Length: 77
Image 1 (spheres, rainbow, N blue to C red):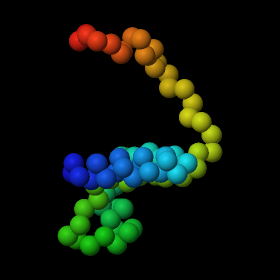
Image 2 (cartoon, rainbow, N blue to C red; image 1 turned 90 degrees about the vertical axis):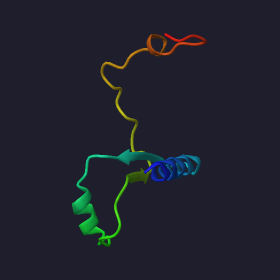
Image 3 (tube, rainbow, N blue to C red; image 1 turned 60 degrees about the vertical axis):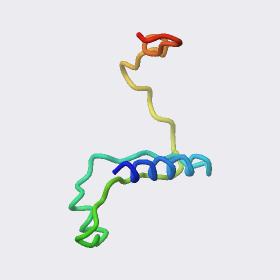
């Protein structure tokens, strides 16, 4: 699983370098996706990544904290 996560991270970084946006996808049915792509029984899906061109910027997240409230420099909280 760690190797898959590292590979996914590198894929997403490469996509960014090429001017694309990407995001990991987590809320999907592994079994349904395996059926759609006709995945052999001896394989598993570890992660899905959406890669494409951004149509618009994401809206601000409600309740997002200011960096100064959550980041500490040169000390342990």
